[in-house]
Amino acid sequence: MSRSTVVCPAVLRILTPLSSLCMSMVQSQWLVRLGLLVFWLPLLNGCGVDFLWHVAVGQAKLLARRQPVEQVLEETQLSPQEREKIRLILDVKAFAVAHLGLHADDSYTTYVDVGGPYVTYNISAAPKDALQPYVWWFPIVGRMPYKGFFNKDSAVREARELDAQGYDTNVRGVGAYSTLGYFDDPILSSMLLYPDVTIMDTIIHELVHQTVWVKGSVSFNESLANFVGNQGTLAYLAWRYGSDAPEYQHYVDLRADGEVFREYMQALVARLQALYAQPLSRAEKIERRELIFAEAKTNYPQVFPRMKTTAYQGYFTHRTLNNAVLLSFRRYHRGTAFFEQVLAAYHGDVRQMLSYFKTLRAEEIPAEFQTQ
Image 1 (cartoon, rainbow, N blue to C red):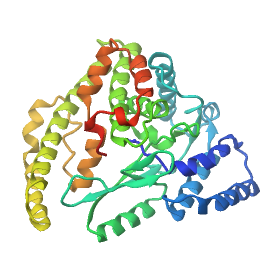
Image 2: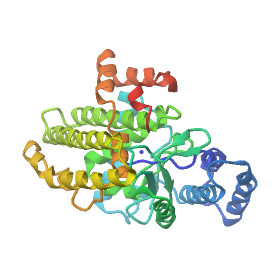
Image 3: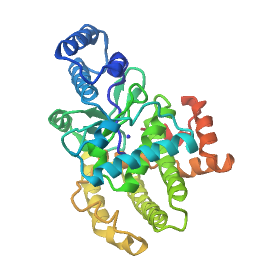
Image 4: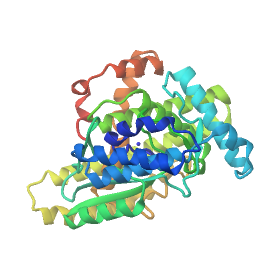
């Protein structure tokens, strides 16, 4: 998820009963439940037992540290700014349920301090001579082009293994993630580090995942959540502040800059696709792509005069480009015209649009989303 990831759903299904654990869970209860996981792990093929155990323990620890939001807001360990961001999350959630028709249940009614800027770490990979994602398979949701770890070292270790096999890799920290409704997702301390408009977008994005998830098409799911996140944030800002307010206009400017950035990145992806389609050796493709990457970084400032903010101007500054990085971008920014067309067909009603997508089968998804 942008901002989100999906931990192994097989473990989430087994862990679902843990969602009702009280906050004062004692160590013996931990051992009993984790012991049950040990029994189940050999039956779960595909994810890898070590990974399943890692996710099971990480998710269980996260659940055990939840505190009711009301209690956290009354305590003094949070700064006034952090408390305001929690109140913002609650307000956006209420708006998303009432006005956009998103499912929330008891998500964001608890709080967890994750002890750092990220709660999970996503790894993605791709061949060096093709824009084709390395894919993992998980029960329930099927093929996934990324894998989420609660521990950074574990993600880096897997990335190094894939590096050694000749793949491009990308490891990135994630401040928020969705369990697709298997649990009531908590507010995470890492989310409070986001700017306000990013919090708005993120909450709506994650609730879309709880509302609509088409198995086997991560690109569709992420692009839909990204689109609704943008539309929902605009609607929330208009509802909360008015469409003439500076808060609303600032987000309009950010979205306009995002479109300039998206066009630039799509042009870069198109150049690489044309290169990889040529009858060249793998070594030649890799050599030529590095020239394309270098040109993309050098030429990027040429689009700055078209931007109204500086939000996207630092993208290439400290980033190493490779196919995994570009696929991670593309995964969240596809089918904008398609989603706009469907939204227009429902007269701008996001609720009705999502109701339509709930009925969509994987084979009915447009061809542009068939690649991850």
